[in-house]
Amino acid sequence: MITATTSLAPSLVRQIIAAAVAAPSVHNTQPWLFRIVNDEIHLLADTSRQLEAQDPDGRALLMSCGAALLNLRLAAEHFGRTSDVVVFPSEDHDHLATVNVHGAATATGMVDELFAAIPHRHTNRLPYEDRPVPPAVLEALSEAASQEGAVFYPVTEPGERRRLVDLIHDADATTNPKVMAEAKRWTGVEPSRPDGVPTESLGPIPQSPSTPHRDLTPGRVISGRGFAVFENDPTLAVLTTSRDDRAAWLAGGQALQRVLLVATVEGLVATYANQPLEAPGLRWLVRDPDQPIGFPQMLFRIGYAPAAPATPRRPVEDVIVEP
Ligand SMILES: Cc1cc2nc3c(=O)[nH]c(=O)nc-3n(C[C@H](O)[C@H](O)[C@H](O)COP(=O)(O)O)c2cc1C
Image (cartoon, rainbow, N blue to C red; front, top):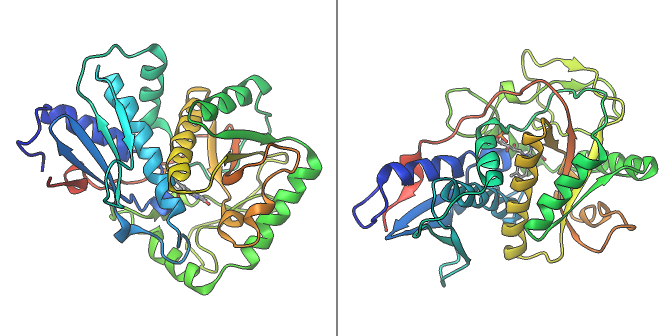
């Protein structure tokens, strides 16, 4: 419910929060809540939606909330508001950011373009075309990450790519039963659910074991899900941050979402094979030793493909809490 403690028009609040919740989130857990106080929109972590087994530190939860925060900032600016952000503004551990959407501002063309891309960005687990991503486009993705204080680098060297694919497979082999049980609750879910990853978004299983891929339903047979030939030469990329704490994860999520929206504008799609980042002992091996020192936060597969289906979201009313 949007209450009377705000001077912001309810329709404006609704549109800004609808944009925020369109963000990607780990297993589509949507681990966020919003509180409206005067001209401020507070972003809160909903830790009841944390993946306790897969994400015990809450890194993926914070990255998901960071992605929502980037959308929130873009939406505020798109609707002609300033969007001053203070991160971790109070003693409340779950209060991640306050966005003050008070004054009038003129949105730049870039803001409008990225805002328009929000509903078109979907995680795409289909096979991609055998078409390289041009270096200038990869450069634009790196620039997007650096605007949010992170580093994005494509993995172009064949030996380095093979090393990453091996790490992905090693991580698959170490998947623990608690993570599998948790994945079962959140992935391959009925389309009527407002959260979780629906079966139709899982994509096919690659025929070749050398495809870098994450099966979100490990060990389960999903009726109607087939095999497919994936691209020969996938474009992989890594997102890193210079620190590895809650602030870095929140910033990393904003960088992730800016990268994804620029990718969407460029006609690209993306998915992730993050399992080595979640396996103690493997995460640090993801970093290319030839790259600047940084903490890996995301491992992408990027390319060109037909559109993937949208995943559901909880209604805006359900993610707004009383002040
Ligand atoms: C922090 C984070 C980690 C994710 N990890 C993976 C992953 O390893 N594999 C994958 O296929 N999708 C991954 N996803 C994508 C989510 O499953 C996806 O965002 C969610 O299902 C919502 O769908 P959408 O992105 O199409 O809106 C991740 C998303 C986030 C934000």
